[in-house]
Length: 280
Length: 267
Image 1 (spheres, each protein chain N blue to C red):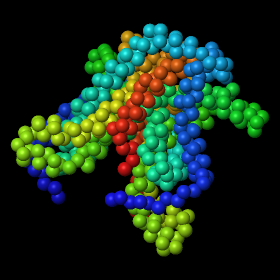
Image 2: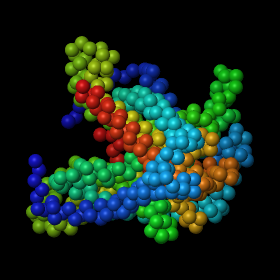
Image 3: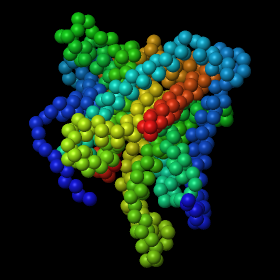
Image 4: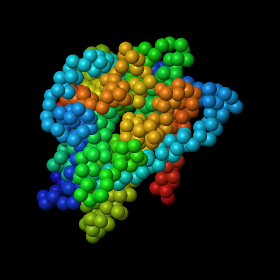
């Protein structure tokens, strides 16, 4: 047990500015959203604390967005994890040759910002764009990416991949190479060493990468806004529609709380289930 | 520990091809946008019709873009500085201090990374309107600062985690006071982290859309929101030219800075 020393307690004053700042401008806005999400509005004139939530869950337009947010993010996480794991394995093996440069290239789309990147996807995925031109020799008719869940998923996998690769890579680099050498010297082949030594030890990274991937995908705004369009709404684009076209701040807040619950709730459930399984 | 891991040289295998494809996938949207900015076609996106610099010429005489770029630079500079000022003492306390709730507090300051940005932007707008304060640039700056604080905090804490505190004690035992020690001993050691945190915070707030969406006003519109509005009504390569200039003028310099100061992306 650590005993708080006098100097530490006295020094705790320097926590204060950041704490006050966060209480006012991080917690404060979230509280206002939570409160406003229960207030009556033009579409839901009354009916108690949960009336807005009941209304949300009774409208097929909103439910459709909720379902799409979940399914597209789930699919993105699964594809992203598989792609990220193999990438991270490759980067780990080639660390000496590639150095830190490989990581910075991965980070480029993150630093470029979502709107710069989504412009590229709009060109690439267009019906007469380069990807369909490549596929034209194989397919009889072009694939519709823009305005479909498929297009959103492609954009989201691209969006989450750098974060997931770095998370898995971090976990892989923590594994002591001596363990693999020991496994090999005891006669295990590369495949068995991977499944029985490397993979189990990388599970924490797998868990964090999937949590991060899902949370980023479900929260994303720019990618579904441009690649899904107004017919393929997700909860985040629904919020912007409610704010900027319908001017219904209360239902926008209700949707925001539901998005928050989706982002944090799935993460909590999943990490609990996996932790139980991992310690079993 | 210097470990010479045995690495066999070999011909490119399946994994090398896979890695190359992943990097193509990662970079191709940016590359296509740049190509689109030089395309003579009047529409965006459009098939290649020959090269032109016309769209860049238009951007550089386009008042709205130049104004939005100034807004974005100013906002991002203020946000990154404010985030540093707030997180430097915090990083010291969270790395060095021993007190109950330390880990919970560190997690709390990282929490903006887990909250959908659009919800943070919405919340700030609603907070300002509930307080009957007009949504001035202040709301935008405050929300973006909260959003980038985890990045500066993480850069600083990673650096301080490996800081040798005996250096401070040595300086003080040689007669330096706290301030001199901080200025001459501690800050030079963590300077790369300060620069990396600042650069990262700057570029992340520069490119942000979801938070800025509800907090920009007609006279104070950051560049990404200006691009969003432009895209609603115009589909021409001007937008690709703006994106290209952002990459050349902001993103690539930031990558270079982060590389020089040696930002660590993995352990």
